[in-house]
Image 1: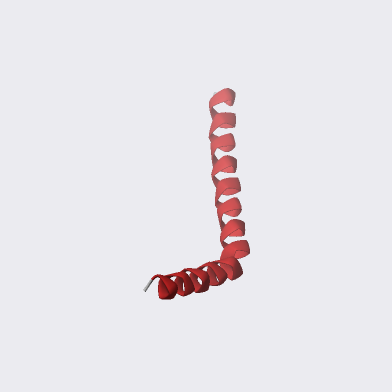
Image 2: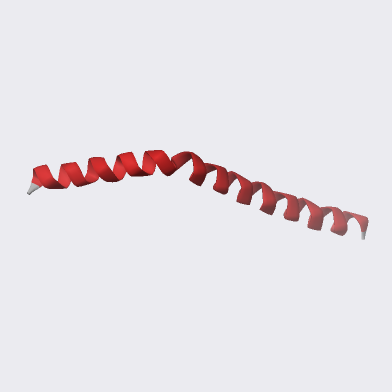
Length: 48
């Protein structure tokens, strides 16, 4: 049972390692997008 779980965990880990770079790039794009929006709002507030 534990051996099968370790194999399943290793397979899941190897699968996510293949997807890790795409996930991290998506997260960084979203973070940059939200920081740009917040900076835009802050610029509008400072202008007003």
